[in-house]
Length: 140
Image (cartoon, rainbow, N blue to C red; front, side, top):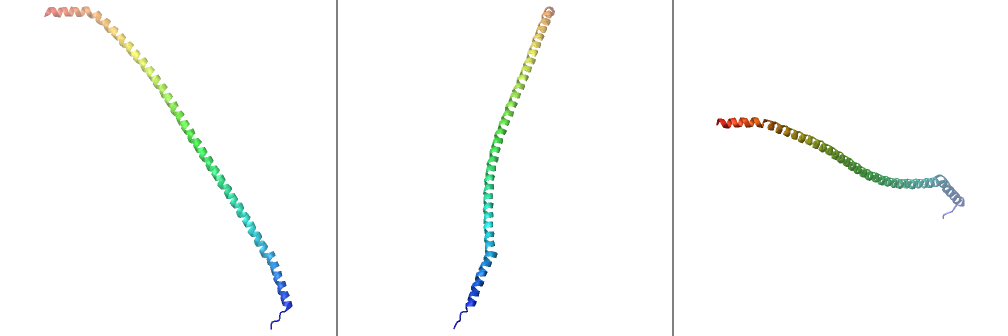
């Protein structure tokens, strides 16, 4: 029947164990070590990505805060400019009004002077008008 050779079986077992030992040292350990390193790198990259996402969110919030502050400052500056322009316009209007009132007062003073001069001239010429009127009535 079948004869089992003890030397062949021992040799097969020794070769199998030697092959397992050799594969463990040359293939499995380096492969497992490489897989562990790769897994560590992936975890590190994932942590960095999360940190970058958090930093981006923080930066976005900071940008929004800065933009809001800039908008408020722009509104404030615009309002100050409007107030300043209104004050300048009010001052200029007041100056022009004062100047026009002075000119009007001078004009009225000139009219009063002309009125007095005209009245004096007419009063001085009243006797002439009376004579001219009497001579015109006498001719009729």
